Image (cartoon, helix red, strand yellow):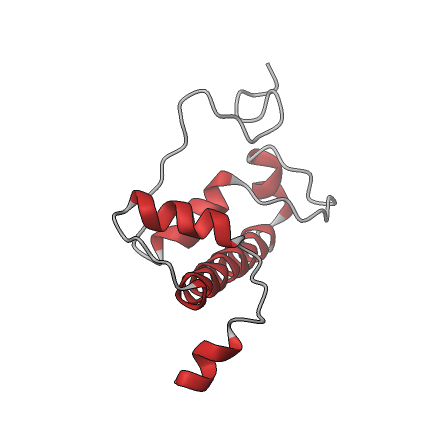
Length: 118
């Protein structure tokens, strides 16, 4: 375990040390050991990777629906761009016990989707 902690001194996580240290301080945990800060950063990085991977899998399942159903949802069945929607992210986060709800003014669908084209 000590070897692992020592290896974190040379590790550069995707989540910056300053950001992790800020959130640790704001939650009441003052940590001066950079190795522990990087350990928390590594855990956050893994969590973010897992959530985005799960959201991508949810998106793929949603897009495997019949073309007519996709059209009813306001999507083009021939569009193969990987777009992360708030619905996909919300479903992925629910698997981890995190419930989010988009604000009422948030729009992630094309204009006119779900309104019969009006």
